[in-house]
Amino acid sequence: MQILKMKRMKVMKTNYTPALIFSVLAIIFTSCLPDSLEVKSIESAPAQIVVTSSVLPDTSIAILVTRSIGALEAGSDTDIQTLVKEIAINDANVTITTQGQTYELILMQDGVYQSLGIPIVPGNEYSLEVSCPAYGKVTAKTIVQPRVNFDTVKADVWNNGYNTYLAQVAYSITDPTSENYYMINVQGAARASLIANMVNPDAYTRFFDDKPFNGDNYSEIFRAAPKNYYRGDSIAVSISTLTRDYYDYLKVRVQNRMGLVEVFSEPVTYPTNVNGGRGFFTLHLPDVKVMVL
Image 1: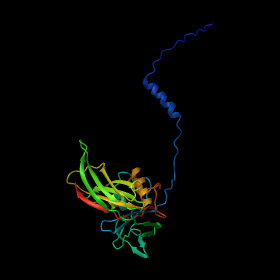
Image 2 (image 1 turned 60 degrees about the vertical axis):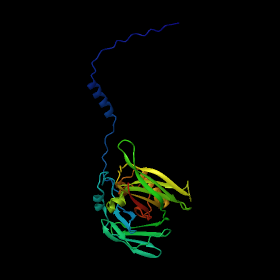
Image 3 (image 1 turned 135 degrees about the vertical axis):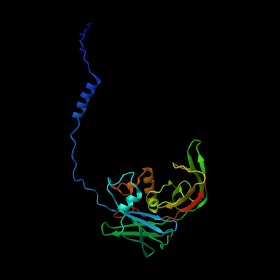
Image 4 (image 1 turned 90 degrees about the horizontal axis):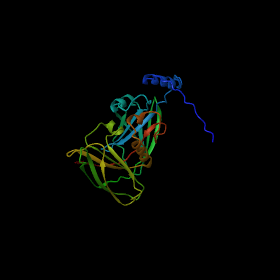
């Protein structure tokens, strides 16, 4: 067998300092990067009408009408009142039609239009029309879902043994035989601003449908997180039945932690039932219970 002998190579000693090595690597990597491209004349999407609706405790209907904004016009720390004041549309004509009767809503404040005289009847269809000189006209329709009330509901303070105090809610309902989609909200009972409650309420929200218990009695216990509640606090617990499209919209919004600005800003990535615009038109009748923990 022939054995190959390798010659020993003589290694030259050099003083490569860390600073020198870093400088060489920096030159290599930066030389591989392409030159920056100058971006000019990016056109923003045309502004659209954005609709937000709510049924108030006195059963009046409130419609918030604003314009959409560009993605860079506001950030996560933007104040709700300030933003809405800037983008509110105060010269709109807002009407709701149901059962052959058309009702005109009156401007109350910063884009909020309200009417006290519209009967809200489960099963009836309601058509919204909003028009203004600058942004044209949008329309939307919704059907009021049957109201489901709590059979029982109570809330207590739950402590995890450390420094977390949550509202533990126990409730029961009797589910109708129709297909139902539910929303439960838990929030402090102190009165917040109308606009804040319509756009970005400080509430714990949970969603569920009745497929596992259709037509039966249903009960549940849950803890409202992550806000701390303490003994003596007043809270409002409400349950509503929603249309399927609004239920799907809200689930996407909550699951993706959709922020305030995304309600109004481009690009459009969330569902809407507003023809020619954005937002959602819906009417539902919540059963609200206010209690002291």
